[in-house]
Image (cartoon, rainbow, N blue to C red; front, side, top):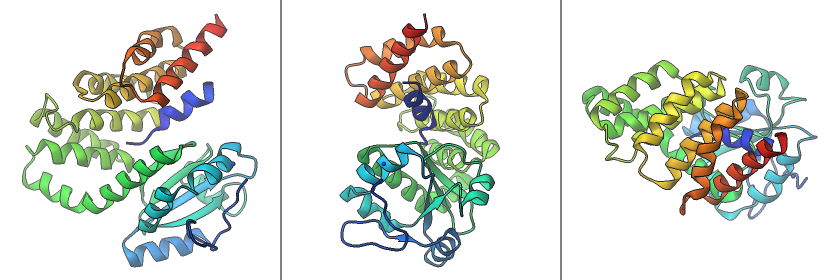
Length: 283
């Protein structure tokens, strides 16, 4: 699942530059240009990991310093063709084409240039690596999932996983269609995938600032969630949507619920507390 809501929550509340095309032991191998990366990805059937950054972006520099030097992130980067693009210089047209206007933004593109995944904002090493792994796995599984759902629309697990992929690729109509199949086949979320599917489609609408469409999806995700992470993710996403609509007081119950959860992820508890503090400072 993409995490756009977490970026806004952090907003309320590095430079160790890795030169393009140069890598030694323990470093990500960055190729020299986006065009070169797309060509290599097409030949190797890999995704391109594109880091859109700017010279003034403090969080971009922190990503360089803390995340891109992490051993697991470096290891996982071998599954991608990686490239850094300055969104205000040589990458201006690419940033405009993909609608990138916040930094850092990391897009995962197919060799044909289609968006297959996105990481918005700074992430510490572990969450960043987890998302890299999920996106790489989804890319490998995508053709198989399409065939499985086509052959058996009642395969709720496959439909939910395919929903997440469609949402990550910005295909709202297809994501909604497979989400309906997933919900009909597995309404109680026995597979554990349905909540993630609701949240993924909610993310897509939230990114497009369609908050009235996103909130009910996050509410459905919350209703069927089976893990503290999915529960907290639905709640923090609802709160972010409400903050975006200047309905901050309505977000308070969900934020307090996250703080009261003993097993909620620490990063989400911190975001919830910061959002509550922000609200109280404005009173």
